[in-house]
Structure formats: C-alpha cells, structure tokens
Image 1: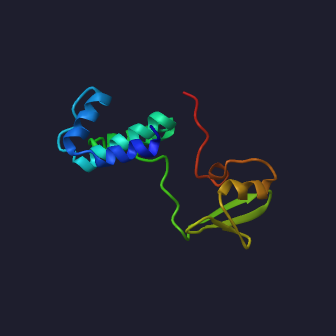
Image 2: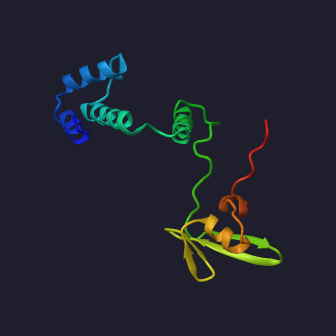
Image 3: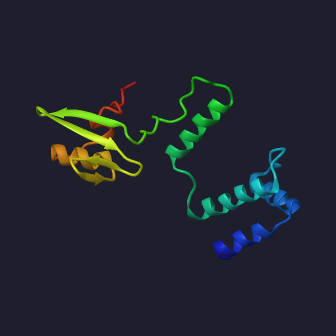
Amino acid sequence: MSLDDELARIERMPKEMLREHWRRIHQKDPPPGFSAKLIRGALMFDVQAARYGGLSATARRKLERIASRLDGDKSAPVLDSAPLAPGTRLIREWRGKRHVVEVLNEGFAYRGSVYGSLSEIARTITGAHWSGPRFFGLKNRRKSP
C-alpha cells in the first residue's frame, strides 16, 4: 500500500478504529484524553517514521528536555540556546578589525550583504571553516567530562 493510501485510510478511521490501530502498534491503549484528531496525527507520524525513519537523536533530546520542563523540573534547559531576536548586533574582533553582524528576520546582514548563516560570515571573515555560533561567542566548545 502506498504511503498516501495508508495515510488516507487513517484519515477516514472513526475513533474506535483509531484506538484499535494504536493498540496494535503500541501494545497499549492510547493515553486517556487523547482526541481522535491527536490519535490520528500520532498514527500518521508512526506510519511515516516507519517508512522514512523517526526523529533524529538531537530532536529526541530536545523533546525530552521540553517534557522534563513540562513535568515540573524548572531547571531543565528547554533548548540549547535562545533564538537571536531580529535587530540583535553581534560584534567580533578578528585580527585587529571589528566585525558587526545584524540579525534579520531571515538571515544575517554583514557589510551590505545578507547571509543565510553565521558560519558563512565566519568563513568570509577568516577564510577558514568555523562554526558561526562559536566564532561569535554564542556557543562554547564542548567540555570533556
């Protein structure tokens, strides 16, 4: 059965059939209070994940941190870092020259050009491959345990 056909079949299922389908896949009942819409969406994700692969390890870790935070652990970091707000200016001195980058809604402005990533700008400045967030001091090197 094609993926589109399988997703369309799930889309047409009444709630009790969705619950039965959930039990077959997960070997347990869906969580109490899950609406048909939520069960349907989760089952559609399961079908696609089985076909194409699930979440990356990074995405799973982020979701685990978010779940931890929602479960009451207020010290759990939700994301690695907060997103940069448009208008933020990043300043870096490199080899005696000051470099100023402005965060835009989409991308970064540097010396009259718009770049898609900070790494592109770091490469332009240094001529070498750099992590843009690391170059501009937004991310530290990983510390050895």
